[in-house]
Image (spheres, each protein chain N blue to C red):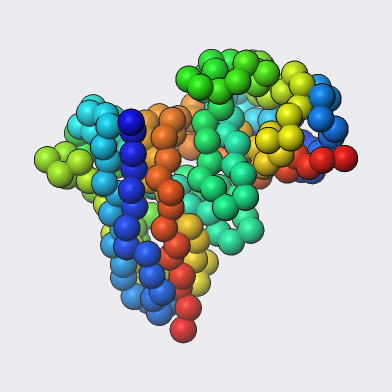
Length: 115
Length: 105
């Protein structure tokens, strides 16, 4: 059974940093690109980052480019999202999702940026 | 590529045939997926590559379209289908539509 389990939820102040993790199981993690997608409260979905299966390419939404970094450790079946210079508008539920068209999603973790 | 979903809110009855629209600002080349999100849950993939049904999804869900215009159809609405539906394109960049909320009439 495919499982994606995010962690790193929390409340942080504007300007601070935070790192999310997503542990994968039930499939060969090193064979698939992985994504981060977020959803602000009562809003729609926003794709924010993609990393290829071998970390050879990384892509970001304009809203997070230069502030967020996606990475992965295939030996640990783990995806990461390092978030710097956080803003109130980054407040959202953050999901990790598998593959080109997100056939599996994690349960999500809430990130709240507020003073 | 921008995606425009219509309507934003759809009221329907159990048993109705329901059609949701997703229009791209450019040709999407069939790289279009649909997701269902129920309140408090993560989204679930329904359809990928315009018309491919994800494993485990009931056959009452179907997708169609080409170019810039795509459709998700529910052939006979069940009460458990009440949710928000999002389209997503992965042809040029990665973009979600704003969603269509499906509610009971």
